[in-house]
Image (tube, rainbow, N blue to C red; front, top):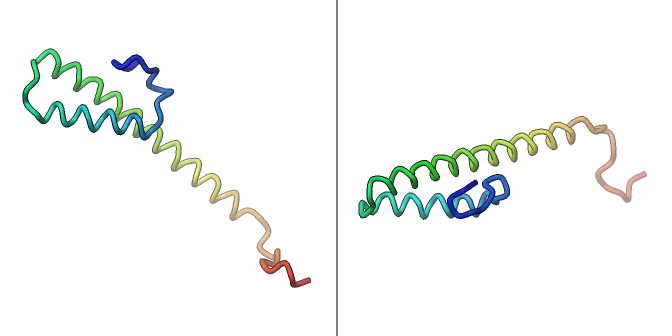
Length: 83
């Protein structure tokens, strides 16, 4: 579970990336206690892995759909007005 109470797997890619950007800004500010820094770094690491996993899954799905599209017959006319 993420620090904000959301189940990490239920986070959208966009929400996870937004949260990761906020964490990076916070870490780069330098105004953070060591214990908080470690917690935020850990959360950021988990969010990075989640984003990476979601991107990989999307790439695999796109590749699968592309391959399925190439498996269709090539001799189907693209113009519906031709017999």
